[in-house]
Amino acid sequence: MRERLNPETPQDSARGDGALLAACLSGDEDAWRTLVERYSRLAWSIALKSGLSEDDAADAVQNVFTITLRRLESLRDTERFSAWLITTTHRECWRIARSNSHTPLDELPEPIDPEPTSDEIVIEWEHASLVREALGQIDARCRTLLESLFLRDERPSYDTIAADFGIAVGSIGPTRARCLQRLKAKLEGLGVVDARW
Image: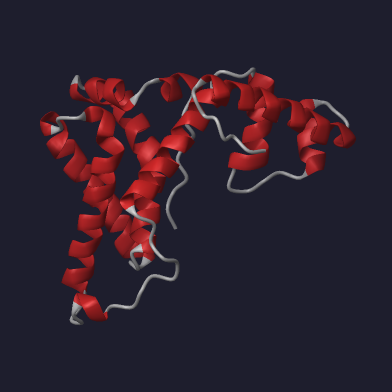
């Protein structure tokens, strides 16, 4: 099973792809770590949805970031990095599937879930980036609560959250609602007009 990466800090989230890639080019190891953390889930989900086994998906993700490192200097439109990474990941998955299979590619089983188009993935990824940016703009208490409730692989119980925040279990719902309203306001400030809650 793959290792869980640390979530981006608000400072990391505030850096756009262009600035992050420029920092990577200048040899900033923290920027590289942030880039990998930001995009590894995307690459991983594409690899799994393409029908690769977990081991092959892990190889594909590792190969994608190796390719990224090698081609970093030649990337022209750094603000469209996510689209480039999606295409690179699809190609790497196809290459691995082809090399592992004696069955013609058109006879490979279809992935369980229909694969979203590249445009859908880019839009979803851009929305996730905006949410990360908006989270970085709200107060730390709300950010931590929302991350606990929605972004952790294993959600803590309400009793644990209440103890961590020093509030009654019955206060979590209203506090969550206020924090979501703050997040919604920040998203609207970033131009997201259909933030449905």
